[in-house]
Length: 78
Image (cartoon, helix red, strand yellow):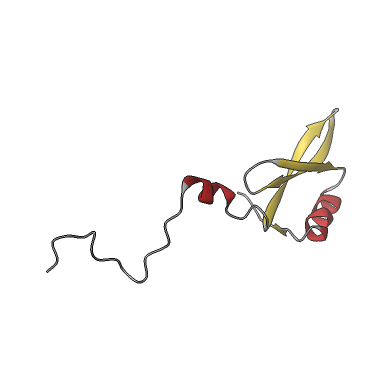
């Protein structure tokens, strides 16, 4: 038995990810839409995977269309 676990690496181990790699995960592939209040009305903001707001639309359908138009996959947050 090998007493030094640093010498043994499983071939199925996930790749090492830095904190920045994890933060950037999905930035160019996914986004989400969230209702927000603007001037007393409900609008729909589009956010990147890291939470950065990308835009605000008047309707949810318009926000989703903007995702598709920019090759972003909408994700659901619960």
